[in-house]
Image (cartoon, rainbow, N blue to C red; front, side, top):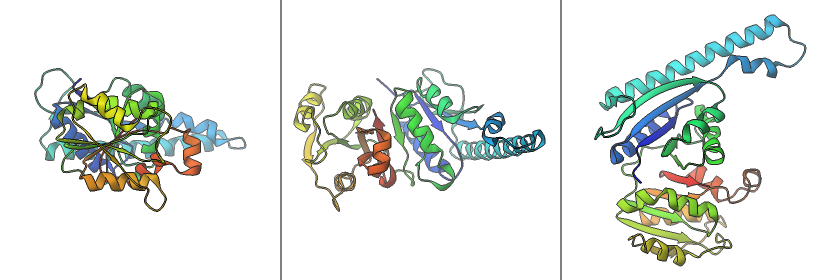
Length: 288
């Protein structure tokens, strides 16, 4: 299945350019449409957070300040988008079939970011999110988790630096889980176009389920030639070892499942997903 619609949630501007560049490159590969989405904070959500003891005037002032800040941020994000598409001569259009080239549009919706992004992602082939550790875009991690946990669709995490290529050399992080199988399924269109594919596995990473060689045999049924490689943890960290193995392969796309354990347990104990989110220097497709 070809990729035709990309969703790009933009919470701020610090990582926006890199994410826009990544989204544009994906759109050009697939002749796809990019919907850049900014979710504005609803000032009415401030009132329940204000708590007791505040006068109506004080709450009104807080709502007014929130509205101004939200409007200023929305204006900055929209202006960044306009500059970007003008500089790269991207066609501004509503999504439609058969354009034969990459197109883009911008939308600003007021509401809760997690809810809006998850809902919009359900009818996107791929959601691309800015790197979640960027200073002004911390809430982009909320968008990431919303897509992973509440959309049923895959997500691509854009790296800090715009990539020169995407999907020519693919690494698949395989541990036999349902989540990693979902990642493989999401990456099928990319693998059909790739020049080289390597399945990465490790003793400390494998869970109960099919082995890496089983995956290679399955992909062979789809006409895909892949190689299997075992990697070792780096500094006793599986995630670091995985990223090192992908780097050694010269990968420009990493595919994996996300959060085999609960998100809370991963946040407390670390985990492969968290390490990859923080450290990956290439685009990462995740699904669960």
